[in-house]
Image (cartoon, rainbow, N blue to C red; front, side, top):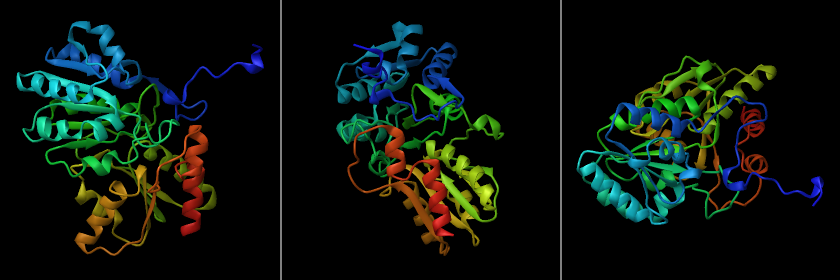
Length: 328
């Protein structure tokens, strides 16, 4: 086979959404969990045969006696994690988001959330972060899990968010769900004097014309869009909402009050995620404001290369800029 005929070595499963030449950090979740485990002997890790693809392999190699390979049995993994939490351990159980939510929801709900156990479910490939199509794109995980009582849900923006969130989740008394960004994860928030606080939204940038209310990787895209819009004399603010549940209603309501265009940005279906959380908060508070949702459509998405898919479904920085210009 000639050089021109060689197939790419990076699979669509682990493809990165990072921009070319962007600063990244390798496996921030795995290294953060490893550091936490060195301080806390009760921390354990579990995987449903996906340690390499959830960055749990970093923990496995450092602490083999505290790692449990459960095989392709997500229900069993969550049931085992519940039992470990019952005896005082602090489990981090990792798999793909689609399997944790669609396949093992009953175990997450009744074995973990109902008794309020300190089990941290780590879901990789959230939303549109893989090109493998509907079988692996967890575009509706937030909609599924937001209705589960007792569950804390975190959607981190970058490596900084992940590294700071891991110890915070372990310290939290109840169950958590982390939308994991894995592999080489962009490093963005260190430029914004940011610190992750569970349950709190953070204003990263001020602006008079547009307010981006963003979560997950879309906070990175919102910051990029805000910088680009300056060339068109559009002043955009960015509010980062890393905790989807409990929702920081007070901060969101304070930010959306006024006459700015509000654009919610999420790597999730428009149904049941951040946009509906913001709209519901505004509606219940009687705040009349214009809210535009930049989110995935309510449909099964195509397979393909991530940059192409992000452009197609409106998650790219260029798509965000175009959406703002069209709405103003």
